[in-house]
Image (cartoon, rainbow, N blue to C red; front, side):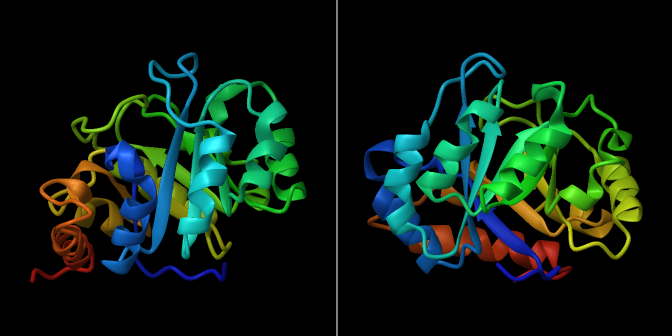
Length: 229
């Protein structure tokens, strides 16, 4: 992964057809996805249960871009090596998931991955002020984590604060939750560059009709970049 601040669309496969993950991943990448976002939930830190390391390892051969793995689990540290072995390029842990997020980010980088830190809507930007030199990505949750398809919560003031704090450091700001052509411009204007979108990408399409994914991705990207197609 090389760092740049161009807009990246990262479809969340939580909204994909669970019976066709391999084909779904190939379809979204062929239709213009920049990253593939994988939401890992434990039924404990968040009220839902999704993918473990074995599933992520199974997804890896299909991902040709960047596999962006978002851990909504607690604790995180015992599972870092497993997700490294599964092939995660970026591994994101929540600042709220444990008492030693500094150590967690060190361990993620030590395992050879890019380190991300996520902030729930109720957590202020200042929570990561002392982590910026250990972080490659800050994920700002614009829904309360646990389920796809939720309504966007406006966190643009937090994004602006983070953008100022980051300065010239090579740190991405990722937005996760309720991203669509209406909300994408708001967060990009505030300083975000990675947009996670689930239902807004997958709605109306399928592996047999993947062009819809491409159109959805193009609409989000065009809106984020300040023009409509």
